[in-house]
Length: 177
Length: 320
Image (cartoon, rainbow over the protein chains, first blue to last red):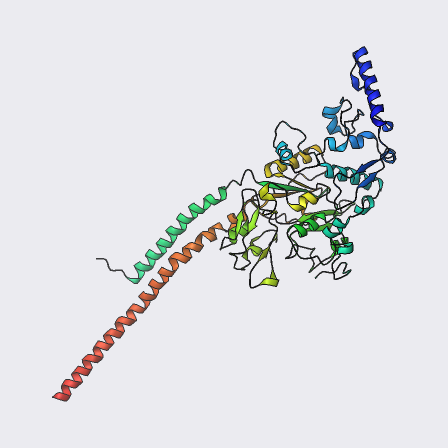
């Protein structure tokens, strides 16, 4: 449904744009264009995937607070406005479209060395999620504990020496050897 | 021929020593000009991003095969531990530690991760007389246990109190400290395990010169968010690991009195004297000793001669 709707809207915008010779970014996206929920599972290893209730979150935040300048809605951050005051809706609005899932890839690290690139400090996908989500949750008093959003997996318990893999000494909470 | 007496000998010895000191000093002055490895990697730690989840501690523990922790890594009561009036620090079971600080200036806590800062000119390396430490071109300060004699001078030399001694194996001396995951990751171009584990990207990895640029960009583009200083840019001559903070660094446990130049600069004049002491002093003092005892020997010989003469005279008298 989503794709069809987007296609129709784009087609309409293109037609209108062609007829009126007007810029095509007149139509910005809104919450109704978005999916109701998104499963964030691309990096799930130590924690289970996140069932992200997109529709619910649109009540707390407007598009540009998470999608920056990609949805055609004017971005709030004055830093971004310097270049993105009139940026039309982007072809790619999903997080992974811009935030690299493999943040430490050689090619990605090489871009940091490129003097022509402004966005040298773009967080990777994992960083983008946590910085944006926790950043806002702290302000509006949302959940901030790790397992409030994603349950720890067996691999996670092993990594953190917790649950089934807790130290043999039992709960020596706060003690120092 | 001019006779070499005691006075002229001492004079000569002192002159040689002074000359050696002057020559040595001009040579050691050049060591401060080492311009770091330009392609060396670095990490910038942003205290405003860290949420104290301890994922870095857990990742380090597994990557480096360190012993099982006393409490789980998702136990946040460790932030309240005060040991001998100090917060937790690195030890033989942990190469990295996160501590919580509650600066009165702000209404929320800040978390600070500590580990080896991988100095451009490491004091541990300078102080080690068996060369157990190496600063690699990738930026890591690594350690070779096979040559270590366990003198622990590096622990005293380090301005950040990072190297720790494995007291549980005192007979096969082993210093325990962060090695930037050099063996398993850094030398293959990969970031250390803690950086990869950080969910908040509070740890930003890249070439040192690039992450320094990132740090400066953050300060410039978010006015009021950070203090205008990157800890480690110049401290002790520059470190591969650097820090950004929203409060003055001394409020979150940093030593802001460390010199802005390599530690070696404060000790190299002394260090230059060490080889001189080792090479010139033995000869010098053996000389003094021989001089001092020469007179006694001559006296002894003369005494013997006299005794013999007396004996001979006695014998002659007896014969007569």
